[in-house]
Length: 476
Image (cartoon, rainbow, N blue to C red):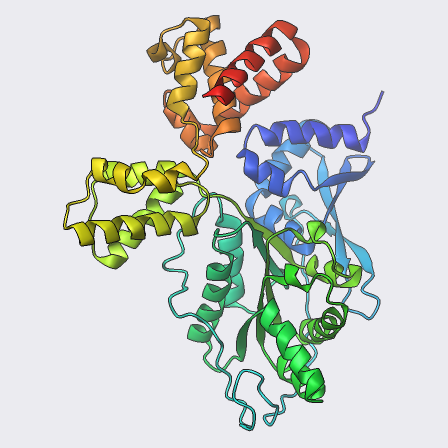
């Protein structure tokens, strides 16, 4: 019996999942669906042109080998890409693209509509009465790419932001939507893009504005009967950076105005950068036609930084402030302050302030004393050391054996459960977990987690083991 397109693609996904990090798999492969299988040609649907370009640039070799393994040497892959039209209806259409891995060359073209700029437009950011359009971008010069630490938590968003800064309006990710929780660096990254654009092309008209500020300006323009000047000003920009667009919720008239401004900018080949606390699909209180446009480009999330990134952030701040701290103090702060970057930097500032006022050197004892109340109010991360100790005590196996190369069944079981719980209960990356448990790579961690999940579903006794250990973790 011949396999269906879904069965073939699911088989491909199993191989791909074992060869790339879990986060990359979730980001780039889970949204893909299989459309059809005609002979030896498998067609998959991807949600945007950017997806297609990213897969072809980063995973074409893996995809080619995987498809050929399932369909034979003549196996080929084609993409069906959902493309949103910049029209009054905004209705999507699809286009087919071959994979470059098959030797075909795929090309896309973008023809921006030219727009003229009226230099006499009134500027809502300056004192009323001044006529000159001398645009202050409203950017904080301290927000740059140089001091924005890259990690697994923000790599996609930072890379996309850098690409936008190099070619505003000329990439597939327009708009660029950056979303994530409080204090994770959305505003920093968005403004870093603006600062980089101004550094590369000083003549570009760039404006950063919070959603609340935009809404207030709109209300003022209604009161002053200057709505046309308000709209013309924003339509004249080359780059608009709109912060916290979730605050549009419930403001129907303001949404309508921004909808028309957005359409004009997008059709003119101008760049729109947005930030939000949620992904577009999770935003409530916004019109569907506006949400659909937010999904046109790339939505990149910022996650809570892992331990390595938190340490790097602290070291960067120390370097910028010209100070030195013992490594154990840095690790203590990074391990215990894990909610967001803002709290992490705030804890460091508090520690330095206390040290200066009390004229004491900062050591581990002082750090624990000074940050005691601060840490008490944060959610402390369960360490991999503690998980390993708990699992080994439960199965009565030596702790040092879990990190060894032995293949004894009871040791392998303890190691795999420890890896699974470390992935579930800590913010450590797969690479960090693998390194901790005996210098293993991320693929070993992926395999261990999958093995544990499979056994939980099929082995009641094994499931009881894991549930017992998780109860102990919750009680700790």
